[in-house]
Image (tube, rainbow over all chains, first blue to last red; front, side):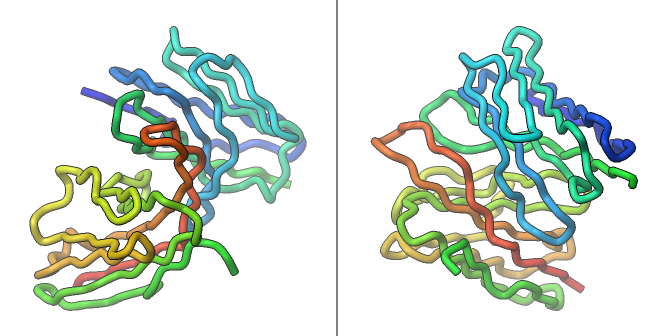
Length: 113
Length: 118
């Protein structure tokens, strides 16, 4: 069956360090992968998109990698800040006729001062 | 504010009652999605529209659920004979897709409608 796995345990890091979150998937051939941020009680907010033919994408302090052989994406936040504390969701777009995003369960990030 | 708007933000109802949620997408967006999210889980796809056509429905969407998007603008999601298992956050999102089945970009989510069924 198809699965998208993100670490369900919260990731606790110290301010200034790099946070690395993992998204693994099985039995998918995604056209691209997206990362979203979600704060408690709010809707997800788009952060980055990476296509299947791209290895890496950067935006300010954010970096995403996409390895279609390993079926894995890594999401990095460098120089993390307490304001980065949130749940981060990965989402895959299926490479079929129907365009829908399938989300992982999300990983909660806590950045301590 | 030109973002995605959802109403009501919170709804508490008794089991067996019907509820309706409304979503107003970003005006130029042709695609509209409904997702459901429970605590500790990611959003689960329910259905989506391209303009006024409902193109896909998840198997999660029982016959008690119905969604419409008349005239390709706002959308409603109705749940009939609510059950306690329907308690969740119902999220609406919109996007702009170009050229038939062209790959769509990011989804813009609303703040969600939280349903509590007692």
